[in-house]
Length: 185
Image (cartoon, rainbow, N blue to C red):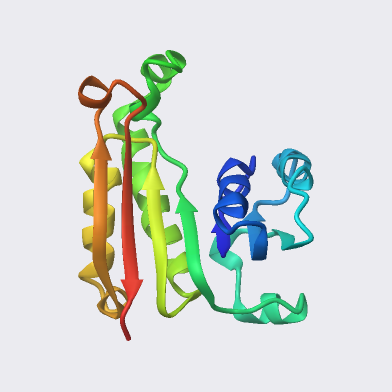
């Protein structure tokens, strides 16, 4: 499993348990202070048959050659992309969001999210899946990013197999969007 935008590591930690402590997780995030938290959180996963590798890299600059140089696979059965977002789904818990968020912030998020999804999709092997998720409830950051991807030449290699949008006023917990895409060719 390739977990991109991985820090601070909560998703990779959960993935390790879902894998029943067996397999390979490659966690990728930007170099910097978040890597320390990622490393600390993943160091607590102590399974003898679970290999965890941390790659400090910008996903937008990541290439198969970088993985090859690190003796890691260039394609994965599953890729997890929990994209940076506007955080509109967690406003009830993070009240600072409503004070700092501006209209252009969502546009900037959408642009980055789209680039990240295109980049992450390059590492999904045939028959593999990519999960694209945000903690936003904005259609622009969820359905529209995924639709844009699926309508592109790169997206022709994938099909949407499941999606969920969680609204706090309906579910009683944080809002989010999650989409599972399968590589079909």
